[in-house]
Image (tube, rainbow, N blue to C red; front, side):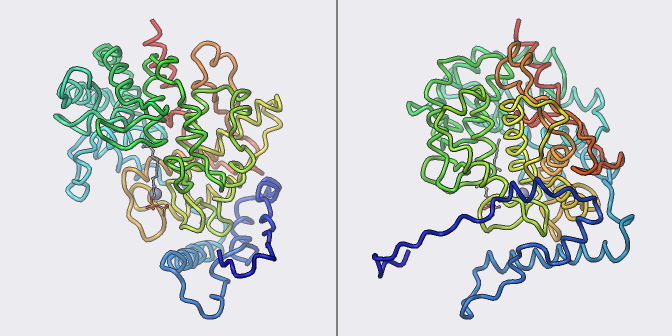
Length: 461
Ligand code: FPP
Ligand code: ZN
């Protein structure tokens, strides 16, 4: 901040809260596209650099992206509303099933040390696409994962979790991906081979005195690690006070002045870390406890809805950065969780659901901009990959359902199981062509709905 003149303190007016604008917009599909290209949006593309200043690389790339996307929408508009792409389900499913049952293609060889993630992204996407998983695909995945659990790299017996492959260090993110994949396999014989007591001992080793968790022995602590640890503990029914003491307080310290969450206290707010922080808090606290936890809900809400760009319709992960399809889940999922809290707070029934974001625009971004020939992608110009295929589909699911607070599930299974998806039938909120329909998502675990409860049920006994 230039501080030459201390006598004048300029207080910037807050920008218009997009909650009011977004929630008021109820426009059908084609009209939304029309509006997007008719200039009724705030866009960097319309800005002149003040005093001929040089634009930063990020702003230049943001402008180029906006123009690319505007051209895509204009092209669709010029041809007519029936040319809006539908979900190319069969091609995306072929992209997933081809790799689930075969070796990782050479161009993705970097992912060889992240095998649980590859299995998770592709199997999760296949279930969201409603193409199902064959018994062979499921048993291959479960036997592979159990084999790497047996061969995890350990200094002593207290390190027991999944690494990225055989003879790798147990890692919280790899373990989260592995356990979610095992949930998708529904293979109870494999589940019975997980030594949950040893997992608990390992999780306690990862726990830090400040309440956070580190990703692995000697590794970094951040909100991702906390979220992964709490999901694992919830699914395996080992979540208790010893594991969670001080964790909610540490998470609250990760909320930044902007409103979103950083990876650790003092860093920049980011969509990925915000989703992890909010989902982790909701595993630990009831909505009533959350409201008294010190969380600044208003600024969180504002920062989250500000991530949706009006031209693109998709989300960015942080202020002034580019739209990216994966934030349809990380930021869209945060919106879904916040909507569920409001639904609980207002004791609303399903007919009074109010959307915090513009679902129609987000669905348009997914369908018009994130579909590669096979698989889904970050943005036009990018190639599809496994990570984006899963998280873009999670975001599409978020558009088509909303989450209500399920008191019975909470009483039976705990806070983590509070979010129950309900199909949106109001075509003013999102127009769901059956060709575009995907399965409902569990907003906390990122799994298709029902798999998390089934696994937790198994470990209840
Ligand atoms: C920035 O990438 C990305 C991050 C700082 C991390 C994001 C975190 C997640 C996606 C959550 C992961 C969750 C689990 C469960 C492991 P960038 O600078 O390339 O992208 P940007 O420009 O969009 O910020
Ligand atoms: Zn991305």
